[in-house]
Structures are given as C-alpha cells and as structure tokens.
Length: 150
Image (cartoon, rainbow, N blue to C red; front, side, top):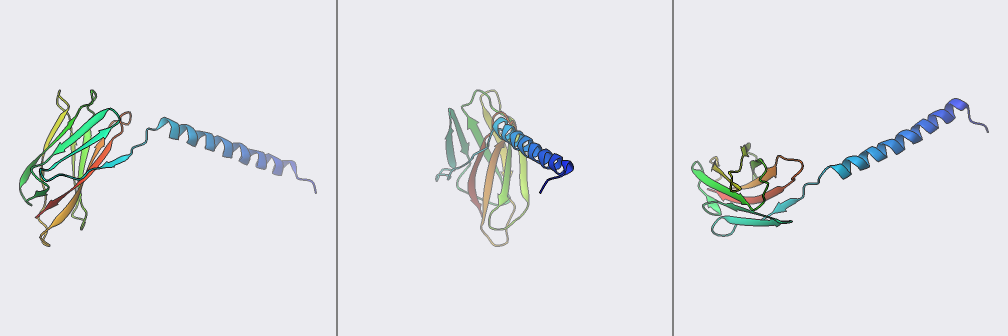
C-alpha cells in the first residue's frame, strides 16, 4: 500500500506542529515563575509568619477572631529588599459573601498597612480566607491564612 504525497505531507506537518507546540509550552513553563501557595495559622495574638527562601513575611491582626462591621488594622511586613505591590483578597469560606480586594504598596521599610471591614453574617460566625499575592511576576509570592468573625 502506497501513501499519497498529500497524505505524507499532512502527516509531516502534524508531526512538526506537535514538536513545535511541545517546545513552546516547555519554554513558557521554564520562563514563568511558579507561584507556590504558603498557608499559615494565626496564633492567639493574630500573628502569622512565613519564611520563603531568604524572605521573611509576617502579618499582624488584632486577634484570631474579629468583630463584624468594625474596621480592623492589618499589617504585613517583609524582610525582602524588594517589596512588591501586593493584592490582598478576602473571601468567605463557610459561604460566599463576595470578595474584598485591596492593592497594597509597601513603605520604605517593607511594611504594608490596611484596614479591613468584614461584613455581618446572619449565621453568627464566619470563617474567611485571606490571600496575599504579589503583583510582580518576577517575584511571585502567594500567602494565605484564615480568620474568624462574629
């Protein structure tokens, strides 16, 4: 059985495209820094810290449990010489009540500060997931912790 030249040409084109796409995907994966999620549990004072490579990150809240419908300070500190712009996202774990998104800039000492207002939940208690993510693709970071409100 002999194959037509058109069929051979199509088979060769498919093989070349397959190899080329595999190469491009491999190059993209190599050039994109991967973000690894780092979770931490707040201590009784509302603090949590992460050691990531040579960087120390720490978050401080007034406690592990926060009152709903009140402003609460949140402080984030990094020991990194390069303190990237970060995004903080807060979302309900027990039920979806929307997301709170804030973009934070560090001061000259690598400190970020914000205030958080958690909505009131009619069930009484609510668990929230707080995610902190770098907005700089060259310095990927993704941190997270949970906090309760009443």
